[in-house]
Length: 98
Image (cartoon, rainbow, N blue to C red; front, side, top):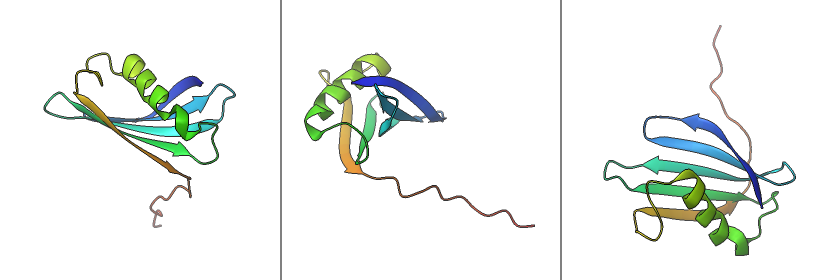
């Protein structure tokens, strides 16, 4: 189901990953926020163009929990996720003046 995680952003308290399916397509985006309490809050955006049906979202989140978050777990109630479905509209960056 998941071929790999590609970290695209990392700060002291958060990370963003692109999740690719086994065929190399970008199928989801995952934001993880490490809270001062020791808990983790995550947002999974399942891309419309990807290959993940809604029915596999719980499996994806369990896999994320096991692979990326060894210090917390869904079972211990110190990690929570919000899952949404959407599409990438584009990248927007400030214009350089000059």
